Length: 205
Ligand code: GRF
Image (tube, rainbow, N blue to C red; front, side):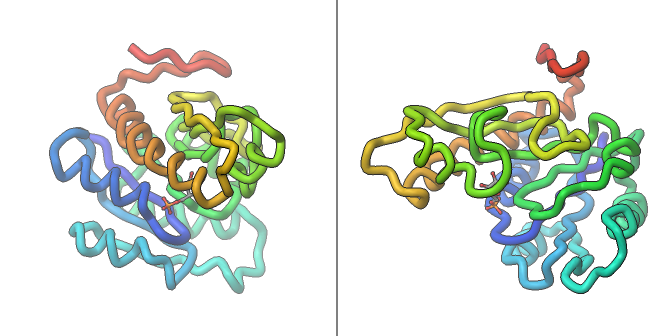
């Protein structure tokens, strides 16, 4: 079975849904470690309650370059068996940009969730971006991570209708519900080796 490492920075609700799906035996993967770059991330306690080991690699006062920090993450991932040949790394609200070296080492083995229909509205405040733009629909995207921000091959998307009275908060809430459905689903597909990457595209069997 593959080993799963989850990287978080805060609330950890996507992580929670993923870990609960694994506990319910819906996903054949070993959740071996949750790593946070923030010591006060709420998700740390949730992971521990669900019986998953946690580590904090504080990024606040880190002075080196991105890869110097990522090397610390890689060291911990490898310690728990999340390797480029036997691991999957899921970013779940991890508020750091991953270095190209990290991406290259774990090629097509790092996955992220973004609260918009990529390639629209990458980056921060994606839900507000969609409202301000006047979009009628938004949603969420699970994608492989490449060396740019929110640009990697798309795996699964879910659509959410934007209501005229929506605020960033109300839309974020409805999108989050969809995130909680599609992220565990993608991890299941990955664990069952049902995702193939062909250039920019993914094929799901
Ligand atoms: C989610 O909206 C996710 O799409 C974005 O960051 C948020 C994380 O929320 N990347 P949580 O920590 O999983 O609750």
